[in-house]
Length: 161
Image (cartoon, rainbow, N blue to C red; front, top):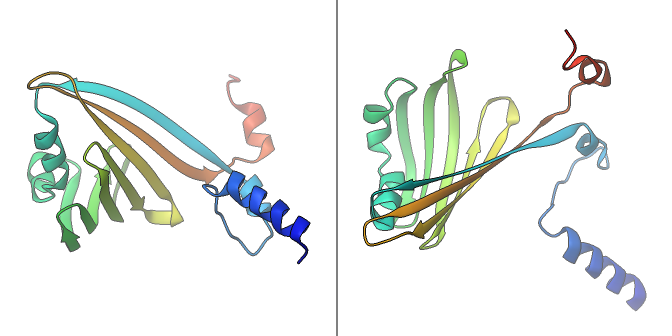
């Protein structure tokens, strides 16, 4: 490979280093996918450390959130990460589903989470924790999931009655 070609490849990799999707169809699968994104933020009257501890207290999920979560199995964990399986019933789909989750603290104010769910879906989440006062914290959650894009026939009908 020539030096010019190596520089060109390095530039492309630098631009797309966060978008690393590999598929045998040469990228054709990508055009059939779309990313759903949501972001919300809420201020709570608890310190940041307690909120982060709560996210790692997985056993409370089946007690506090019993309406949706049925079982959690911790596969492996350490002080700042956890790998688990969860059984839940989503409020809008009355079917019990299993998901595998990996979450970890990147910093003391940023947690990342990956939920590998049914149908090959991957939910990526970033949790940002900001101190707002002596006993307060703002939690901002960004969620991303790539889903199949509906066929053109269906998107043309959206919004019509």
